[in-house]
Length: 68
Image (cartoon, rainbow, N blue to C red):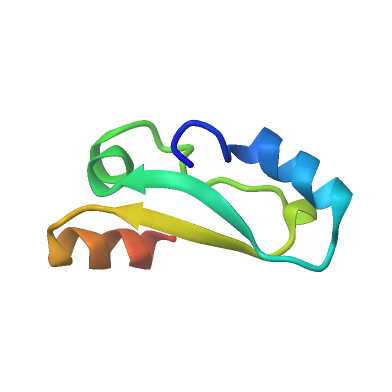
């Protein structure tokens, strides 16, 4: 959920359960490659977090996946 499942939301959800995979908000490849550098930061207490990448360029998606 774009602009909703940020690290604050994930911290709240993690307090409700420790037995589920949490997801990042949808992040575009352009935001990761050319935007602020904090999109890929997360806290260890968040546990297992899946990254949701958005984009149409396979090379940019691969580059972002490697950065993650």
